[in-house]
Image (tube, rainbow, N blue to C red; front, side):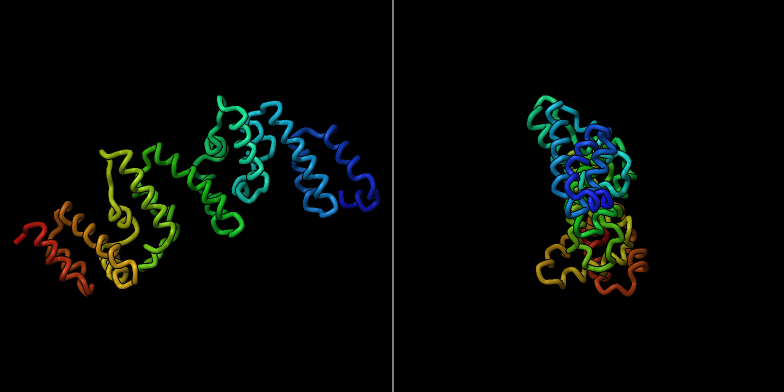
Amino acid sequence: MNVYNNKHPGKQTNLFKTLTTKCKDKPLIKILEEAKKFPNLESTASKLQTEKIQSYLASKKSPDEVFTLLGLGDAWDNVIGNPLFKTWLNYVKKFDRENPGKKTDWYFTLHTSYMDNGVESMVNKGLQNPSTVKIAEKVQGGLLKRWLVNEVSPDHTFNWILRYPKTDEKLFADPRFETWAKYLSDFNQRYPDKKTNVINGLRTSYTNRSLLQMFEATKKVPGMEKLGTTLENAMLNKWVRDKENPAELSKMLSGVDTADEMIRRYIKIANLV
């Protein structure tokens, strides 16, 4: 295309018009997307691509159909970084606005093509690139909503949401911890008979020993003292529920600065004296 444009600078529009009549939708969209990368073709290619997508809207093509026509059904973990994905999300908004009786769940369309594993992969990749973080978070939100509907326990989502969680007090200042805590809260509210707690989730990655050290460090961070105390209390409540043996706790937590105090509090709360 670049060679053609150099040889025939005045005919680029005619070339595109020929493409729009000769090419099927999917390859045409792909060609136009590539053409947009060239400064001298970008304007024309963008205009024709917009016109093509507007024609889909006029003919009431479903978001599912357009997802496939834009080549998004086989892009795998490159979906989030594909400019056409944003184009498609905008199409969904317009389609829903103009066809309120046929509203589409954009995430359902994405998940149908990629399932949990594929979506998890694209989110992981998208969150690593500053230019795609925002849209990756949107997709992650869709995945978490699906997990909530499917009753996926917060204990099982902890490691995926946190992704290589920190091993110190910085964990609790990580925005991803807040995301997980929100999922935990939503899960408990929706499924009161399956309630779980923060400590159960943390215990999927950390020992009692590590957690007590992290909680103590958190209490020393300005503005996080209350959180550190709340987490310690949650740990005590878990020990009570699990009927932990004080002697075993003492042995396991030997050397941890707050161990003796925590065990004394536990014995008092559990009425073991």
